[in-house]
Length: 153
Image (cartoon, rainbow, N blue to C red; front, side):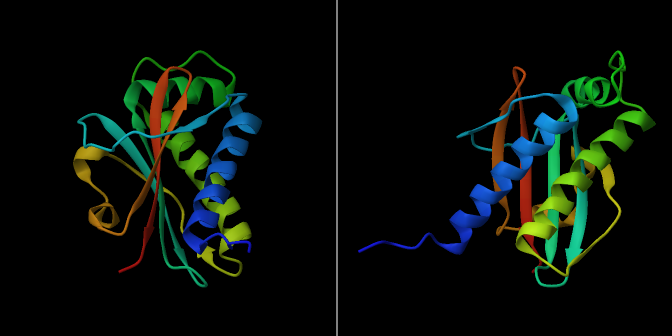
């Protein structure tokens, strides 16, 4: 007797594949899902998009400021900025938009997505306080980042 995977495990696997694909295609980076508990840390950046339609909620990317700067350099094929600036916010938002857009196509057809919002982790986005959030940790170029899926309350 074959057991069908649960919807949640299918969504997690699909989201992991989407993240790996975006990072590989856009920045040439390999990412690995890892088991690591999430904890709030000052100085992290968070980019989020809201989704409405067949699935309602938010998709968020959270990483350290230094990692966001390195990603910006790779994404734009330039030296990474020394500190977080508007360009870093734009790139982090665009990476999140790509993850969310692929998630929408694969798991929430017909949904609409918002433009990304980017903030520091200290200025928490309201959806991040949800107890229903699924936080996936990834290892990438000696750093860790999280992709968070938050269903609407």
